[in-house]
Length: 210
Length: 210
DNA sequence: CTGTTTTCCTGATAGTGTTCGGAAAACCGA
DNA sequence: TCGGTTTTCCGAACACTATCAGGAAAACAG
Image (cartoon, rainbow over all chains, first blue to last red; front, side, top):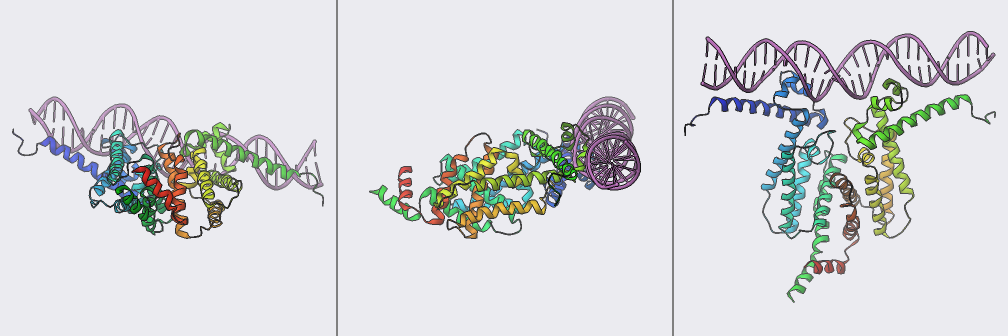
């Protein structure tokens, strides 16, 4: 078929997508600088040398902008999941996931806030974006299942523990590592709880063999 | 001294304090009904049959209203602390404190949000109100110290765990008990971790799972 | 060069918290 | 009851916010 070079229509849409991305980049910068609620369409338009109303050519509303940021954040999180080292050691897996989440939070607090706390007044993710969040959730879930953790209650406990560490880190020591350095301890605590202590595991193994 | 009955000046100030309380009551109702960010000075004034500007006679700003709610929330929390059953059993103490916090959260999500999440855009508690929050913090801290838990890291782990359970409960299952029912398990996990494991129990757990 | 589509802006609406200045009301002491 | 003081309340206005409607300008398509 005759589609060797990009048609003009495509180039037009590419340009549309490009400025859309420019807006999102400026939005990230604004949010990074002043917090999640510092996002203002007026300021955004000013940064991009246009009138606020022009933004509506690219986004249906301010919340639509948030929605794109939300989706992008979840995609980034999925990327980091994909880059995790593969291993069979449950404790190592738990540690990696915990560090993934907490460092995702400290890397860009506003992004973590957008994804996991409900700090933007009227924002609710669109179905498409929410699906990404569910994907993240189930990715974590199956990563834990892969090392033998398939109990609902255990998973809830785990997410509560990790979310607690992340949110406390952001709230009480945003520039330090007061809670970050508890991760190994938290992993040990949780693993001991669900797998039994290392000693108990050994006892258990020998019992099973017998 | 001639101060047997209340002087007019006092009555005047009493009246001032009374309408101040009326405003706060209406604010609570509004926040309870529509969430923490549904608080609007215009709507508030409308409910009380006055003009929005009149509220400034009683509160310097909208955030000052939030500040009073914040302080009241912390006082309520201190009250609940005072009502805790006295006991020497560490695990029971941990359980009571955890239940205290999580039920405080589920009883009135908006209040918990105001106190422990940073969901109101520009609000920061005044020094006086913040002191109450610190008081709550240190009350919890000394309650744990009383049963032998005086390590900084342990305390941080504990607060992270409890805060995680509470916030996950509100975010993922506001009307249920999905995380609330994990409290006993969480207490056991944490207690085993800091006080030493009950090996027999864990072996038993492992066997049951196998 | 025409017709169509996309982009952008002017103008306006409705909402927010907040400040100013003065009027009204309440209170106080005599 | 009267005059002076203090407190309360409101009309008007300001500076913001997101958003809608309509039309002009620009970009593109054939």
